[in-house]
Image (tube, rainbow, N blue to C red):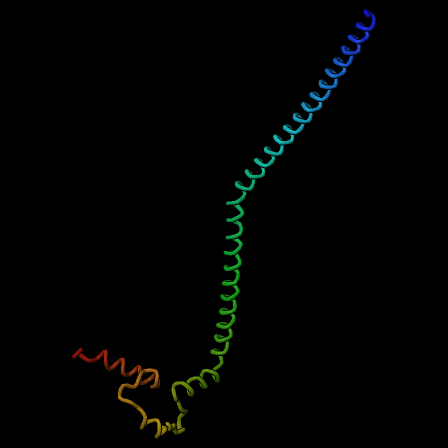
Length: 158
């Protein structure tokens, strides 16, 4: 029986050793996986921290950039409008250099006539009857408003 006892003990010992070895391999494998996972998790956390820091650091300059681009486009639009106004004024200045144009303006707006010509002002009788005593300055010719202003400035009974 001594032989059987030894064989059995040695088999039990072998199984126990085999179990311990297997447990050690499993433990090492789990430890490696956990170490690998924790390293990736740490790296991912650091990467997320770096990305968040970059977003926070670049948010204000990007906002400034976008607002300045809007201001630049607004200034360019205003410059184009001013250039168009300048061009229109240059055209008007060139037209005012022409004596025939100035004469036409004087005849139309100031009711000037040449020497020897007779000027006529036609009054619509229907419009004269419909006038109210509180007629506004917009309904009258500009020169009437001008003289009314001179007369009212000259009055002392204000």
